[in-house]
Length: 123
Image (tube, rainbow, N blue to C red; front, side):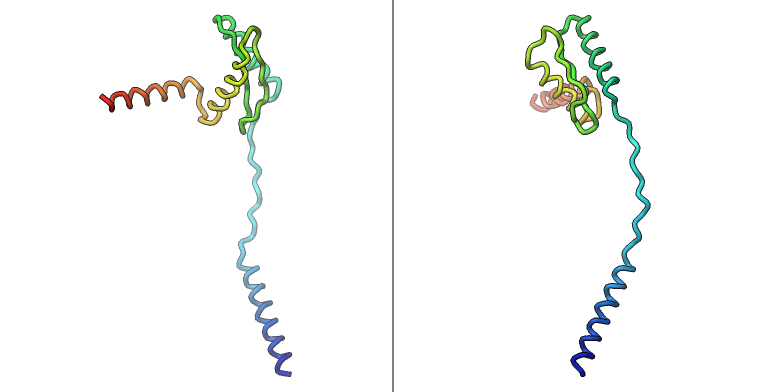
């Protein structure tokens, strides 16, 4: 008799603890979906074509890549009369610009400034 009373008591304590723990958990907040904009394929193609045409007009044979928010390739075009390595270089340049969230020219300026600071310290 006492054994069944202890089992009943242990079950009651366990159930009570479980109920208290469940009630103590915060209610899940209403989920808000993030709203973001991505390049469409047609916009990315326009960007690539404009970049290649502009560089060609300035005497450069280049390839161009447009990457998405996660660094994935949306559009990649190898320009006419370009070396094979330009396609890889264009991807790396686009990916770096996306990673640092700034134009690649700004990264070049930061690197130059850093090299100048190091050179000044070595003098």
